[in-house]
View 1: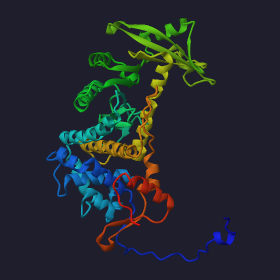
View 2: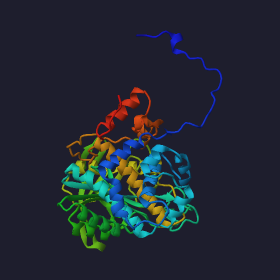
View 3: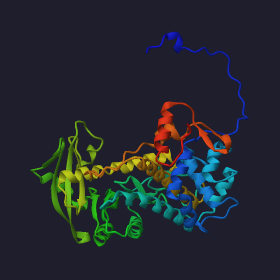
View 4: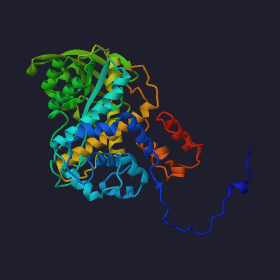
Length: 461
């Protein structure tokens, strides 16, 4: 039925009066859904068992402070000062299990007292959370992408160094490295590092720790396949891959001593991969390393002059017509499948974008190195928990794609906040029964009902 125009209008004259005396109001109704999901995961019990006597001392319980920081990250807080917006919110208090929320100075001092053992304990919590979802997928192989990203800091932040910061070269920074599992869409490991290193620097120790973690978490013989960029093209990385029996695909930098340019210039026949992309394969001898690698070289046709034309006579054979890349691998894949597999690595970059824009991964809440490292682990944990909740509402796809796409369809945390997480509600107690009223909007009702039905929520009539 079509309504008349006068019925669609509303007359608004005076400004309303403001008052601040209604108790039970909350701006984060969706945290109750997360709290119920955490109960199903036994997250609080895990925190108590894994973090007992392994957190800095405080008047507040350490598990409550961890949950408070998770609430801050999930709801969109980027700094500890944003804890002020959570004060006196009844749903946040229930989420954390605290009757009174601490001030940001108290949380800042608590984070500053963190040490390496505290950060390692938080990493074990993330390990247990991610292992549950990965085990539930019954994967026969884990697709692991290793990559790093820059986090700019202040001038006096502990552990920050000037170095490989491409956007702000003179600013001290951290250079954390993460391991992303492509089919589950989760980050299995994170390690903070000083900013005067590149991706591959110290990566061998990170990979060794990751292999030990995977062996302890997944005792079944899962096949491992790694994807890495050119910064990891190092002799010790190849040797570790061989020793572990893992498959690898590593981008090959166009270093002059590798002499890839001569193979490209003398090549007459190229195999078609897709429209505009061709490839050929060589067995590349790497004499300083005393090894020979299978390398697939690609050229991509471009219809414009690129900014890298001038590099033709230096180290990069890119021209205004073609752009070239090379991949070293021990996988038994054709050039077309290998191209698709390596293109799937772009998902990790999107995850970094989600971490920084949605979970404050690039924030620096403390002047201490371990405090900031703990913040990064909590950011990754909040990211994984948000994806685990979404995965619990879906049936996993059983198809393994060449690009190793995630088995679930994930929404960004910004969408979740807009749809149901950061919604106003009223916490009341009719007849002594705690009730959360989130209004009459049918879209909100649909979102809450669909999630609550799988979390043993009871919906009032």
